[in-house]
Length: 495
Image (cartoon, rainbow, N blue to C red; front, side, top):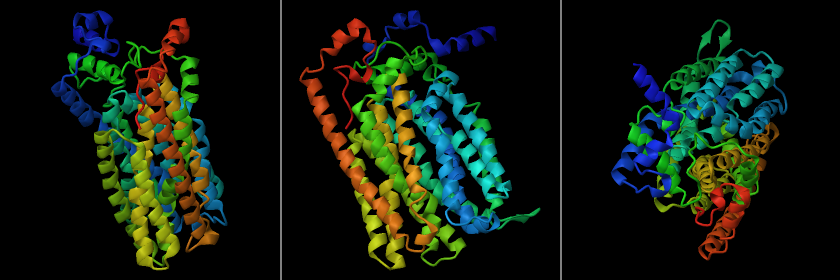
C-alpha cells in the first residue's frame, strides 16, 4: 500500500532520469499512432463527460432567468422598465473581472479540483435565486452567480489544452461547448415542467432555480473526485501513457516550447506580456466580443422573441427546443470538420454568414413561419463560432502561462459583449425587436471583417517564418528572454 502511494505521489512530477532512461524527451518523441489514439480515447472517456455536464449546467444556470421571466418572475418581483435587463447585465461584471486571475489560480489549485469547486459554488447561488423576493435580491444573486461562474469558460479551454494536441483540441472543445445550445433545448423542456410545481408557497418559476441549482451541486461534487489535474496525475493512464501524454504536447508545438512540463512551468510576467502583446490575442479577443453579442442575446431572449410572435409562454418554451437542438448537432459537426481541415477562421466566416441570413429573415419578414425559421439559421450559424475562436487562440499561444493569460484575456474581453447583448432586446421594442436584430446583424458584419483580417495576418506571419525572417529571436533567447513559445521561428500559427 505504501509503495502504491509513493508511486502515485510521483506521478505529478515524473522525474527526468526516468525520461532519459526511456529516451522519451519531447524533442526525441516519435509518434506512435496506435498509442496516441489509446491515450486520446481514455482522455475522452474520463474527462469529456464531466466537462460537458459542468458546462451544460453552467449555461442552464445563467440563462434559466429567461425561462423564469415568461413564467411570472417579472410580476412576482415587481420588475419594471429595464429592471430585467439590469439583472442580466450585473452577472457579467465580476464574471469578466475574474477571468484572467481565475486561470492563474487554476494552475495553482489544479483544474480537476478547481472547476468542480466553481460549479458547486454557483450551484449554491443558483439555488438561492429561487428564494429571492425583490429586485435587489435578484441583482445580488446574479452578481454572485457571475463571480462563481467567472473563470469556468476560459478554465475549461485551458484545462483541455493540457490533455489534447492542438489539432485534436477543436473537436473536444466542440463537444463541451455544444452543451450551450443543448442547454437551450433541455432547459426549455425542464423549465416547462418545473414551472408547473406549486408547493409551500413557491409557485412555478422558483422551482426552476431550486431544482436546476441542486442538480449542479450534486454533479459538481461527484466530478471533484474523478477529474485529474494534469496528464501526469491521470490515474486512468498507465505510467508509460502518462509520459507520452506529457511529451506529445511538447512535440506538437513544433519547437515552440522547452522541455519543461506543465507541472514544472513557473509564472513569469514576461509570459503575461507576450500573451497580451500578441496580435492574435488582440484581434481574436475583439472578434470574440462581437461573436458573443448575438450568442448571448439569442440564449437569453429566445423565449421572449418567440413569445413576441404571439405564442403562449408554454408554447414559446417548447419552441426554443428545435433550433437549439439543431445547433447542438452543428457544433459537433463543425468542430470535427475544423480539426480535420486544421482551420478555424474560415469556418467562422461561413458560420456567421449563415447567422446573418437568420437576422435578415427576422427583419425582412412579417411571417411567423419565416421568422421562426430564421431562429434556426441564427443558432446553427452563431453557436459554432464561439468554440472555434477560442480554440483558434489557444492553438496559437504557448507556453502554458502565456496561453492561460491570453485565453483568460480573450474570455474577459469577449464577455464584455454581454453588456451589449443584455440591452439589445428591450421591453419597449416588443414584439418585433427590430432594434435588437439590427444590432446583432451589425455585430456579425464587423466580425466577418475582423476574422478575415486575422486570417490574412496569420498567413503573412507564417510566410515570414518560413522565409527565415524571425531567426533573430534565437539570439534574443540566448540574451535571457526565456522561452520563446509561440514566438519560436519554427512555430506555425493555425489559420
